[in-house]
Length: 74
Image (cartoon, rainbow, N blue to C red; front, side):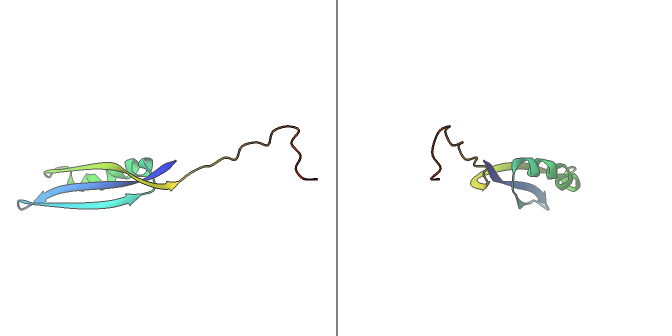
């Protein structure tokens, strides 16, 4: 299963702490976006991180194979 992941960017301007959040469909998407999102803030008092939520964004359910010899109703 894949879970929604939030990119949280926290930075300080004029002594005031600000926070920006962006939701991604997976931790991989968040991690891929993090360097570009953080780049403009890297010289400031700032940090960015990806936090995985408990909400499922997609799941890959594979049905079980039908046992051999089981009638399919024909």
